[in-house]
Image (cartoon, rainbow, N blue to C red; front, side, top):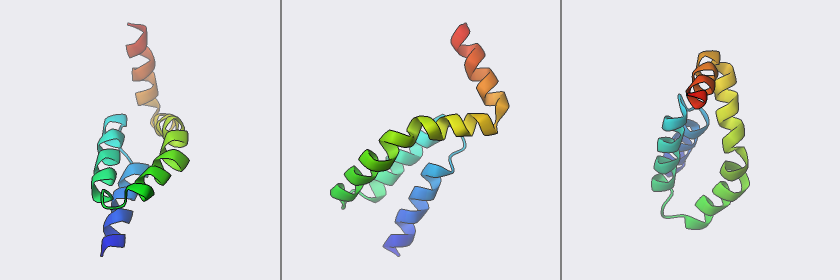
Length: 76
């Protein structure tokens, strides 16, 4: 049961719908795993820290309208 909860929270992190939901999902993942601080630190340092930019970039490339909006939004 716990494993399913942890995996559900992890799947939400890697299958996020927007950058904001990614951040919300990471917070939820941390909350679900708060009893395992070493595990959370391991996941953050080995996966999340290194992949956050790539995950967000992949998400925006998969949804070109988001990349367009982000690019134009930064220019204004």
